[in-house]
Amino acid sequence: MADTLRRLTNTSSFSVLQDKLEIWHRDYHVISCDQNLNRCCELIELTAKIQGQLFAILNLTAAEGGHYAGVDTLKTRLLPWLGTCFSMSKPSVTDDTSLQLIQDSVEKDRRIRELSASHGNDMQKMETQLCSTRMQLDSVRAELVVAHTELDDTKSKSTTTLLATEALKAELCLCSSLRSAHEQVEIYKRKLESLGDYERQIRLLRDECLSVSVPSLLLSFRLVRSRSPSPLPRLSRSSSPMRSESPTRAQLTNSSRHARLVSRFSDLYAVERLEAQSLLRRYITDLEMVQKIIFIAVVESFKTAKLAYRQFKLRVRKTLSPSHFGPESLEDAAVDYIVRNLDLYDVQDSVNGVINAMNVNPRISFPPEVDFVLISALIRETCRVAFAMQTLDPALDLAFTSDGELYNDHKYRRSYDSEFTAPLVMYHVWPALVEGNAVIVKGEALTSRGWSRSQSRSRSASPVRSRCSLSPTRSLPH
Image 1 (tube, rainbow, N blue to C red):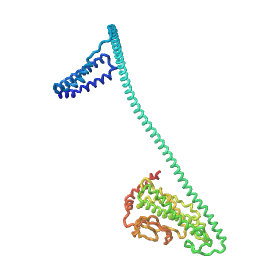
Image 2: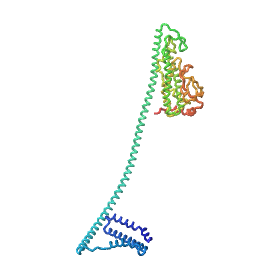
Image 3: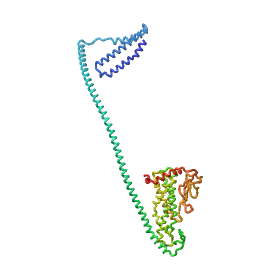
Image 4: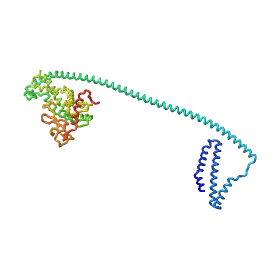
């Protein structure tokens, strides 16, 4: 009995019955009447098989219990259920009524067959329409795929065309910008040529002004001499032992000009030097090299300005000497003229000379894409101050310097990054201003016990700098 029950459990007959019942319930309104009846009969047959197996199990279970075991259960449950299922009630209809029912049944069967036939025809038509619709849908899908392909091709072509158009626009813009740049270069060239002409005209006009102003200066000297009642002898700036009683403009303003120029030299250190240092640090990261460049620029500016002063004074003396006569010396007259006409000093020529001297200096180097014109403002102001200092009596000058010299506390102050116990000067940051042997303004120097790394780099880079400085293509960065 246990084996039979296990086989019934393993076959999952009730699960199969439940699945078939659910499938029939889902497809009841879709399939035909015959198909519904066939599925109902199938379910009845399956139920009968299950009932047969259950009755076999019931028989085996009752036999295992003996003759009297399970009798009450069979009497109270099985026998009443069997009587209810197989008992038939007495018919309550007549023969006429049964005939009418048979006719109605036949009529209903006929209608069912007609409806089934029409339903079959409708289903066939719907299947035909469904097939045609599916074919149309497939064709539409194929057309859609083709349209998508064409659209992708069109997009790729339009993208290529757009890129080509943008490239053409960029090329046209570049060509126009190059054309405008060439035009601006030509304009600048013409302006430079005209500027050169203007400078030549300015030099000619200065010479003419010099030649014209000399007679008026002589006349003023004569007028002063005629008005002075009793000239007294006094020491001259030159070797002449006698001088006019009335002092010249240069002598009268010597102390005020001295104080003003000393203050201006201090301003160069505090303002123009820092501005030039910030400009150079954009292109040179080594602070030591930047400070060396500024120091050499100041020293070269003083040298060039002193040379320009000597040449300018020689021209003035040459111009004054034929018509000069009077108690004041020719030297005093020339200095007084220079003090009155400091604007005649060609400072731009001195700036160019300083830059040329720095280009061939082996102690400093500069990136090849820029030029020392970058610090021309500092050079110009230093040249003007140095030129004006030569008109003082006595003249102001820079103290002599050399790398590796002993540090002098009277001439210099140490920079913030110096070694305060080092006795030697590694390099100079700013020169000292002296009047004879007296220090007027202290300079600044860096003291260290080691050797400068940037000094060795500048020595190795100086030939390249010298060669690059001769190239006319060097210009300021824009």
